[in-house]
Length: 265
Length: 290
Image (cartoon, rainbow over all chains, first blue to last red; front, side, top):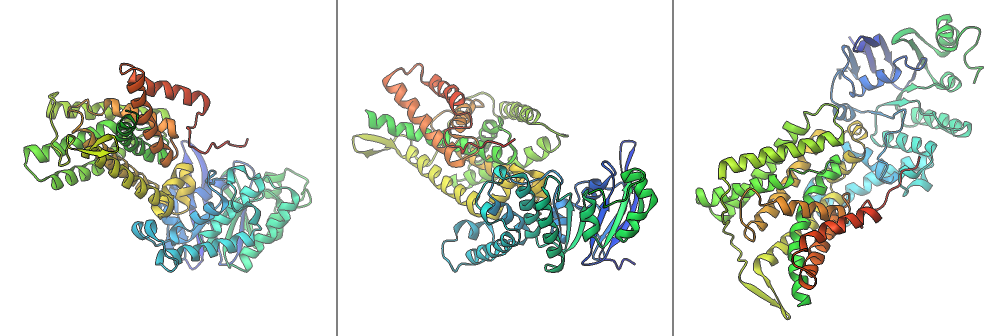
């Protein structure tokens, strides 16, 4: 029944009497960039939290590659191939960039306690595995231009760089689906431009499907294949960017009257 | 005289170091100083005593049995008490550890009473080895060796293994750890099992020197905690060094200045350290940028 790569059906979650997400459904094709927009408090991040397992939805289902993953624990979701970033950066701030990215490799590491603690030869199994993971992480560091931050504690890096480290860590998981929660928040316009290129690269070169929450309308309209607009937890419209941009309810709910999305930014 | 005081200081310091390590392991993953640590070790030591004395098992069986018991006790306490806490803050978790500390103390007093017992130990505290002009007992030597081996193992574990690194990650940001596929609950269980086992080792090495009763770990726990604060609650090496430093300073003070005030030295040092280097002598001081 569910042929889509990723889909959410009738997702609801309430906190006390508040319906934070109210019957939201959408489906995402493989390789697409799918954006969710809406005013602050519309329930966008809550949807992400339901998908990644941090919240348990009150009702509704989440399907990923034909499998029902609703209500699985976060670490199980991660092993299924879904990675995410957070709106307010969640990093291991007393570790270096390298170490943070290596932690993203956690689910791919096979070495046991004994061989991990005792490896001392270059050719040993544990050493080979370590090298392989480091190579992978180096590629991500190159991709995101993080070379200068490699051995610094992430807690001391500038905000924009921290956001990139978090993106890098999500990539290190080798996800099939990547959830980006306001990746450009707190970045200057130059950093934002770079970010747009990287997101496109992630889509094109790594073939990763992306779910995006973003307030920068220009960016959303530029890179999204499909856009879903929600307000008060309820969906307004889903469609291609131009369609959503023109929809009168979106204009009213999101930007107020008499404005066109995209021009403002 | 100096060398002798130094040696006994190191021997005592090993025990403090073990207790400090046990506390730091839990502190590193959950930021909770576990004040039940001493009673957990005391109870495990009693289990060794029971297996040995009441049931007449061999040393090897009794002591390994007690270590296994300690591991399960750690997992049990974390699962039953700490994990139940709803939206806990650090203070409430600390109070929970104090709570089960009293429960464990009560259980031990009820089961074994307040009688002072002797835990017979295969290594003697009375046979001595000469090192230059000084002597050290076989038991102290064994304590020292066990501590060193455990320290090396722990260092390798936290530095190189996947589980060890996952523990560090869990402490720094549990949510991010979850989202990266780390089973945080499982990590906490492992942490408590490890910590409780190390505490039990300290208890069993201490019991032959002291007397085995429910108060066994009262003072050693405070000293171990003091060592951990001295060296830095976030570093294993630091905490262990803190233990040795405390043992040595305390013993030198007892030998040269005053035996009566020996115990006070430890806490005097803590106050000084907290005034001048609040994160401990050996901890990398981390300043959060605002």
